[in-house]
Amino acid sequence: MECSNLLESALKKGNISASLFKGSSDKELVTDLQRTLFELGFRKELKWDNYQADGDYGKATTAAVAAFAKKNNSTTDGKSVSTALAKLIIERHDLLPEMYVLWRIHTSDLRTKKYISKGTRTSISAIQVFLNTIGYGEQLNFKKFGADGLYGNSTRNAVIKYAKDNAIECDGDLLSRPVVDLFLRDINPYYGNKWSDLAAQNLPSKKSPLVLFEGSRFSGKPCRADVEFIPALEKINAYAKQADVFIHVTSSFRTTTNVRGAIVKPATFSNHLAGHGIDMNLRYGNGKWANSKVMAKYPNVPEPVKQFLSSIINDPKLRWGGKFNTIDPVHIDDHLNKDRTIWKKRYEAMQKAVQLGKFN
Image 1: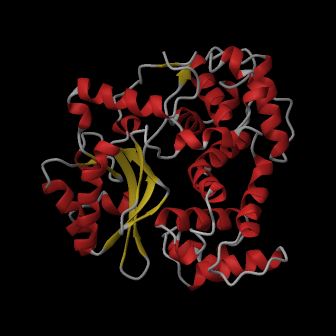
Image 2 (image 1 turned 90 degrees about the vertical axis):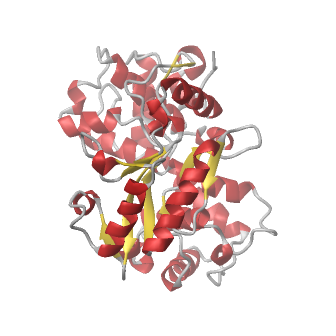
Image 3 (image 1 turned 180 degrees about the vertical axis):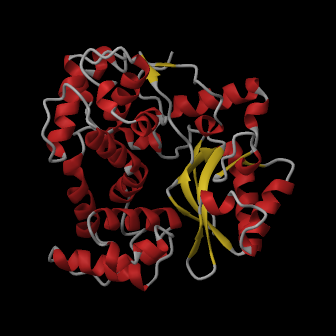
């Protein structure tokens, strides 16, 4: 789950408090703030069942902003959102996909999923992100490897130290109930009481088109996608394997602003909103990274990166954002939005699957 980028865009423009304050006329930005706070668990404060995301920065939104700030050790009466507070809201929201994965582990039968070291890349990445967030980045060597989804000595050492610091016996491999309970205990205080209510619908189920893609060359944030995008992701994974690179996902499926429970028409026909696009960085060699600045120099890039991007470019069913009119070197999709009718069907199916309120 990622924000619809309205808050991030407003931050980049500067002085966000000039747009986010009680009585603001920027309905679209306020709506995005309300939806984000709802996903962060502040349903009660927002009086969501009465108003949902209505774009009105009134008493309920003021109460929700103040409640979030209090839980995150910030002092405000909630009547406006400062730059620092907006950054914190986005930071907490960005962690939700990993929290949903931890919640799934928490509610699972740990007798059948008991070893961290044998877990999926998604679950291992979630644990790595969480441990880095609460101060174990040095043990993880996070600056070098990030959330790579690989269970090596660094991750094992971080898990052992975390457990030891909390007086829990742990060999670094066994994911015992006390350890996973501790994960959620330490992150819960920063969120509203209702964040976990959305976990089930933001994870795969038999009735949902939402899938968590697990690729041997995928790491980073959980790759949440439409089930119909999976063949494309499998090809992307195969190209990464051939080029000997790892795909570090930074963004995948995004939820959109929900107004009065109805799915609204998005400003752009983004394939992210339909679960048919990813943003990523590439890791190659001995922990080297290719970010947007590196990939933008294609074809003058390191050979593994060049081989991977060339494979994407030469595949008639895939698109690389570096070839867009407005270049976006970190983006890959399957050009679903070339047919707006098909795009709309997948968009509605995916957004309905994780709908925040009533779906009309």
